[in-house]
Image 1 (cartoon, rainbow, N blue to C red):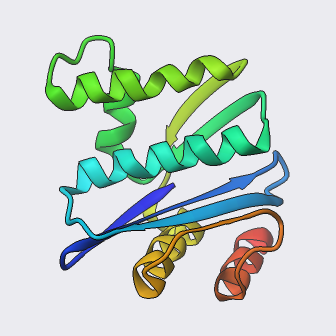
Image 2: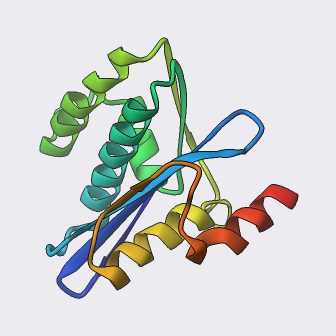
Length: 147
């Protein structure tokens, strides 16, 4: 999952893969609202959770290139800030899965989700897809598969 913030708007993207890296589905969402980056990343997390909810997975590994978000999620029970409380509330969705893990991922390993965010902003629209992903991200998915 990832987020992008542009002048007066934000885009969120998420891609779901199986244990072999095969794309199961994905999504992007557009909002006419400029957000602080951490709040945008949290919205991307929520879009990712909606996506995997639709895919009916039991075991979930979330990846984000936002170290701050990953750390806030992992330490949500001790965080008394407004953001921490919102994360704690949003993470109640974890109860739907048998196991949940969240990991930090290098920015250059998050190209598909990043591209989906930018597509959301470019197209000013939302999209959910299964294996029939947008042609715009085909080369990135192929590149990820062979590296």
